[in-house]
Amino acid sequence: MPEDKTADRKPHCVWLYTEPAADRLDAATWLSTTRELRNLGWDVTLVVVGPDGPDKVRGVDVLNISRPDIYFLGQVIFHFKAAWMILRQWRNIDVILFHQMSVIWLMPLRVLRLFSRRRRPLFVVDTRTLHMLPPDQETLRDRLRRWFYILMDWLSNSLADGRLAITKRMAEVLNIPGDQLWGVWTSGVDAEQFQPALVDRRWPEEGEPVNLVYIGLQHYERNLMALSRAVALANQEGMAFRLILVGEGQEHEKLTAFAAQTGDLIDVRPPVPHAEIPAVLAEAHVGTLPFPDEEKFRVSSPIKLFEYMAAGLPVMATAIVCHTDVMEDDYAFWARGSDVERLLDALRDIWQKRGSLQEMGRLAAEASNRWTWAGSASNLKAALEKGMKQTSSRK
Image (cartoon, rainbow, N blue to C red):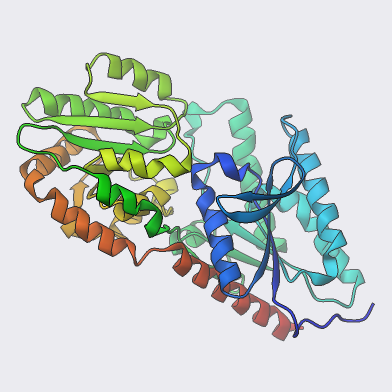
């Protein structure tokens, strides 16, 4: 088979996202970055879960592949269809980008390169999160999933052409070999999408409560119950706070039950479409990130942090590296621990400085311009092109 010539076409990346992009709050990672990569001169086929065929999600062209809602078998069917699509475009693909869930299904395709003179496509694994649940909270399915990801990370280090990570700390935790790590690219934000929150927000006047907000998964490990208890205690001390929790998760019912005991201090809401998030943030005066100092959070780059900042919110956050690596003190309220008392100390700080919230929010919005999806896409593009060059030079 003759080597195909690629000099006269854009580099082509097939990117697999094994979730329905329209339903996920973190889908901007794939949708916004795909749009920006295309703007930077790449041809990107973003494959997502949905009714088979081309589609447009949040203004981004995607290719839907259906996935039956059957445990394990659904993944088999989805990846079989994805593999068939890849085989049909084989000669025109430079990079196949995917996460750990897809490793076991796609790596066999890499063997096909051994029977072809073509040196591509290259198989690249991108890791953006670790298994979240603590062992004492896991079901049997959760434990199987955790061990599956450990195995997939080992296979990725052994078999993938290259690897990407959300942060340098993530790459270190996964023990990615230096010559296999093509680069890191953090989360980001489309700042203009959150401009309405800056315009529509009304800051609290004397005697009015300070509205806190959290948007995201409501799982036990996110520490939202401790935050809720701290808010209740702050109000008992004579401060005035209201907490808005938007999302779903294993602790949603417990949080709802606790909120019912506090009157209207805590408002637990179901998830909202991504387009409605700026309106929710416009109700708030401070964004919150009460995550504990655990490895799975230390290695992360939380999208919601950048969205809070772009919406012009000061941020109350635990002083862990995924937050301190990003934020500056002039728009942050630091909790020096994730227990109720340390979170309460941070609330006391907010209450003392409530007259400065608007100015702190302005500084946060300015700082968000350094953390855009355009910048993340530029880092991803540089990593892919560096890896392509390295693998070519090895041949």
